[in-house]
Image (cartoon, rainbow, N blue to C red; front, side, top):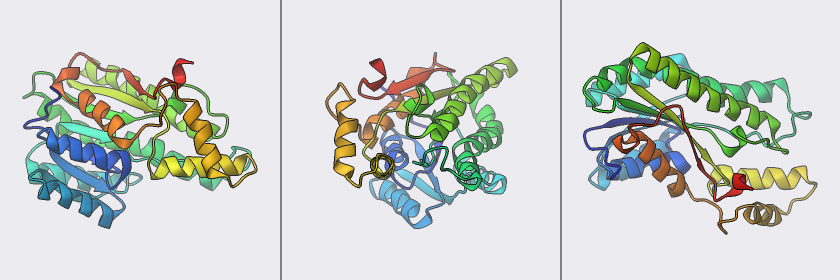
Length: 267
């Protein structure tokens, strides 16, 4: 189940957190994995760990806000592995600032990473994904990292919600566009709840600050209480969902959003 044998995956923001967990899990499932990130030393380490575990890992530098960087990353992938079957648009950032306090520079940076990066990755990977889809029963796959903040409003970070809402609808729209063109590229999104990663820790600190406190542990406990399942998520929880959406087991899914949030948005 959820095997990726013979597949080649390119993952943005794969140096750490959800991206790194996804890279490792995809390699275990049989994929050749390109670990792409602007954090070059950490990304190289993740790729080396995959190779050391008898997997196929390749590091490539990637600034998701740059068209030139994306073009080079896709070219490096196809040069090394001969094809591209899976794109995971994982790279993202959390602003953690009330929109009335955010500057235009803050907003432009948030949009550049969370939205422009997804646009460029999708556009510039499409030709290689389309070519690989011709040889696959269920075509190629794109998985976009959205958020539950792209489904319901975030009181503490409306701008983050705005960008992730954009990713949510871009996923659906590109799924329809690729289907209309006959490209056989499936596009789905995944919507994590609060995940215990570096970014998750940033959210606790930001929320504590916005509430006029430096008590990060109280902010964490408040988030924990919002999850009916009784715990916060970890990177592997999301990685497993991404691997499923990228695999042929999800061959009848496109334009869908998978919510992995411990029941938070069920309330």
